[in-house]
Length: 191
Image 1 (cartoon, rainbow, N blue to C red):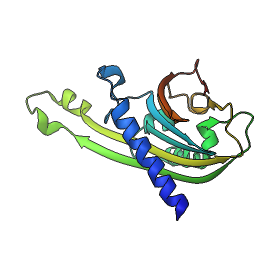
Image 2 (cartoon, rainbow, N blue to C red; image 1 turned 90 degrees about the horizontal axis):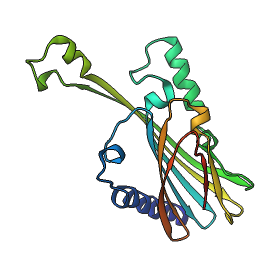
Image 3 (cartoon, rainbow, N blue to C red; image 1 turned 90 degrees about the vertical axis):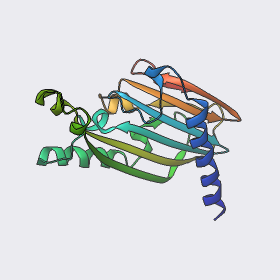
């Protein structure tokens, strides 16, 4: 029960932190309800010997498509991605530390939008472009490590899933907080 309360408190802090502290007025980096292919948000909270990891990403970055899987090939791609996401190591590694995953949660959500009603005067081609399907991955992990002194993280998303181009990392560690922009050329985070 004590661990559940602690995890709930940390999750609440993380949610408040990611929604309020990092609200950026620059449209390119605005994070509220943004669905940008190639981009994702990674939130990390380090508390004592526990690391909470949260990833929110369009499915396009991971699967290469967003529609509901219809073919055997698409089902196999989803199955493989979901299998990889059973471990936090698909997202990041923690060099030189002895760590164990103690919890995980995966949500793969489809949301289709039909915007034909928005502007009936547009031609059919334009209307077809707005029949969007937005699918998202929401992943959460709890990782316990023997020690988190001199902590660094190596972000594996870019090598495991080539659809990622940019990841906004929001972090809380030792009563400090910050934001780091990650890319395939910038994957090491030192605290």
